Length: 323
Image (cartoon, rainbow, N blue to C red):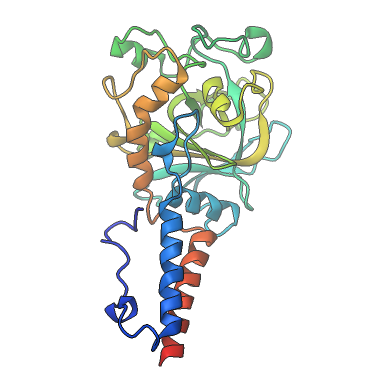
């Protein structure tokens, strides 16, 4: 089990944890056993490293952040830019948010009022390989482009690929550009997010996918959109019913980008030439886990507050009854 950063673990008073005179403090003994069972249950909860399938389990601190946004405990802490659409015929209430506008460590999407973003499929880049099953064919992706925003950077790595492959690389379309009058734009690099850096995507059902920032949203549509990912990432969350023209419209998907050079795997920190999604995702998982752990203390969800409140209340009640 992992404890809050900077802690050596939960240190309870020796008088409480002592087994001496158990009959004198029966309530304390009950609290101790109950609290110990609670810790064992939390310690047994699977973490991202336990999964060997497409998506990972969501670590507790990231789940607290996710639930806090959905429960409107944290909401959009600081809006960097707003007025974006997650659904084309919806409302322009989605914002790029951060924990600290002066020294941001993360940037995430929030729709406000307990909503986050949806997930549409982006088919841009390379389409080939053993996992290309036609779900991103040109006829199913009307806004297909044969290059991603960072193709030149990928080519500079000289790792045997010309661009990201939508079937292999779990990339996120993040940031908005365009030159149309009044078009809403946002450049994540202005706040320290680097191209091809690792991102975390949380889907409902305790699913976490480590992806990369691999493309940006343009002005080829009617509205400035957010919430697109490669078909590899979409499949990891929702399976093969996801296609170039069929996404997920629930507003409960969390996209988190991390600032700083330490979020960038670079040429040698990822298996860019991987032949399948699973191989590539596993190559960036260690860095993704490190970045997610860095989120400790960014925000606390209601679930976490309630958990420690119950535990603390039980201990306080035991001390009061024993006095």
